[in-house]
Image (cartoon, rainbow, N blue to C red):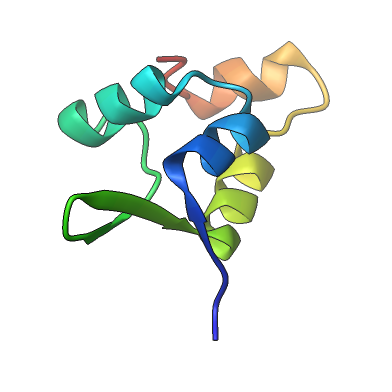
Length: 71
């Protein structure tokens, strides 16, 4: 079974406010999959790890060349 984390836990791992995660979910600004369980929002730990890996760079040239959205 894959581990699920709350929006607050995901926020702490990504070091972005929960409001930012909500903005991303609403606008699609970042490709971070989420799960709705009733009114609760959950994230798979694997998806968070993948997102962090995709947003890890050795220098700013990698970031700029990849055309990443910084929102």
